[in-house]
Length: 67
Image 1 (cartoon, rainbow, N blue to C red):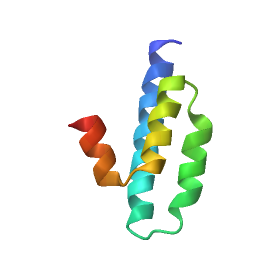
Image 2: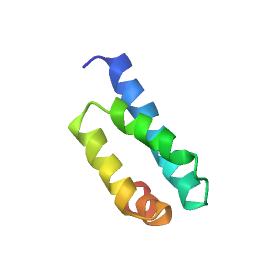
Image 3: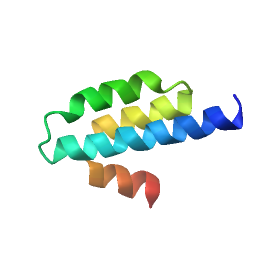
């Protein structure tokens, strides 16, 4: 995987986290955004972080992974 692809995975993962935050705030339209972001993740590590983001509250995810 090249540098451009790694960068794209980082952007997609961040989009997913933002969408999960929006969904937690009551935005019902965020699910399509979440689904699209999930489909675009190619690396195992990106998918693992996405799975965590979907099973934790946004605050818990940030505390766990961002310190």
